[in-house]
Amino acid sequence: MIGKVSFRNFKSLRDVHVDLERFTVFVGPNASGKSSILQGLNQLCGAFHRPRPDVESFLKAAISRGSQDPVELSAEIDGHWYRYRSLSPGSSPNPPVGPRGAGTGFGLAETEDPSTETWTEWKAVPDGTVPLPRSVLLSLEASKLINSMPVSDPTLMSPDGTNLHSALANMALNDPDTWQQLQTDLRRIIPTIRRLRHTRTSLNQNQPTSLLFDTVGADSLPAYQVSEGTLLVLGTLAALHASDRPSLVLLDDLDRGLHPKAQKELIMLLRGLLDTNPSLQIAATTHSPYMLDCMKTNEVRMTFLKDDGATVCAALTSHPKFPRWKDEMTPGEMWSLFGEKWLAGEDAA
Image (tube, rainbow, N blue to C red; front, side, top):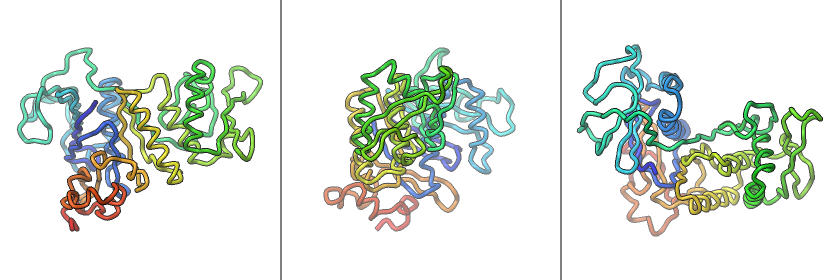
């Protein structure tokens, strides 16, 4: 499990250090850096699993505004820190070693903490080492979840929801137990769904399958006739139940389109998955106090954008008034009371 993560010069995360739990939820105003934290974590894990040019292409466009320093993404797992440092703007492919250790690419520090100013030289990560887990960042789009379109690999759903229909059809055919469990979980969150079915969009066997919903009020509803919230939950469950699911799942806007009761059911379902999958870790963003009410206070992280455009992030438990209210309020109530300005030294009272 990743215990800590550090970001430097990544979008608004100019110098941000975050402790992670097995289940961590980020809350804060719009454009305060919540999604950037998930993106940075996803890029760091991806750097150890994807071709380096793909990572560099993303990070080149994500350097903090006005910065001439490289992006540095670091994570701690099992007592070791692993880092990926991008090329600096305008730098040569092989820049000299700087004061913060080795040059671009992968780095390993046995005990160093990137949140401190004392650094030892970063070592090179041994060839073939894949220290960080595979990750997936779900940024589902209803328009992609609706469409049934031919793809090269019918077993995989893309992070934006493309190919949901074919991925579920493959699950129904090759893993019927998981297919039934997915429908059970969907009914738990959206009780009006009775079952899911598939039909081909044409008689041509090479054409993709189309998903149909049988509900309490009607049968054989195509995807474009069901609610956005239903589609988003289904896409999330499809990713969580996939046979190739990564061990780090990042969920952006977890509450989007969901009734408060459905939000709580989704959190409880995610907790159940964590209980039965010891290697699974989840990080998510939300704007819902109802979801926070289902979280433990130590699992909540708050973000705020300062006047200079830099994100600050801290645990809800670090609020100066937390000891007074911890036994009286739920996390959602604390968030509503405390707000986020205290992160920048404002309104701490």
